Amino acid sequence: MRRFLSRPGMPPAVAGIAILVQAALAGVLLQADEARVYLLGHPLNWACSFHERFGLPCPTCGLTRSVILTLHGQVERAWRMAPGGLALTLGVLFVAAGVLLLAGVELWSANRSTNARWLEHKIKMGLQAGALGYAGVSTVVWLTGWATQFSTALRAVH
Image (cartoon, rainbow, N blue to C red):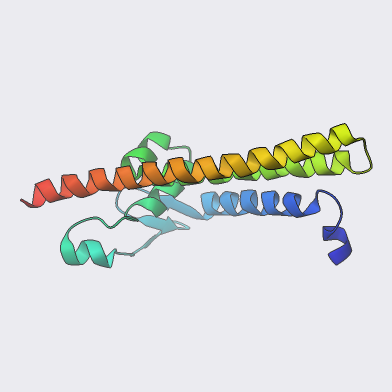
């Protein structure tokens, strides 16, 4: 097994495939609506203790439901639920696609010219820069969405 994973392209291929398999499983096993998450059609009675105690959404309120709605292609509902969940899901899927691309290039560039290795290097640098940019943008989207929900809930309380 160690020898298999040490071959060019295998570590990113395994990582990319693992991400996509987990997303597919979540999409098959889980459903969501605005009120709750369902596992194989059975409601999970999770409750946010912060929301129950204070009547205000915590920073992660709605993220799980938003991720599940995104996996089911319900992008508009996911955005309304929690924009950070949509950003998280799309970012993770793009990272999976990027590491699978890297796996293919690593496999192709093994024992090839320096031009092939140059392409591999550029893809790695692009993935790193993209991941950092994604982290910043998704954090802003997540916190802005939560702040909007929080201020709306505060206005409703007063």
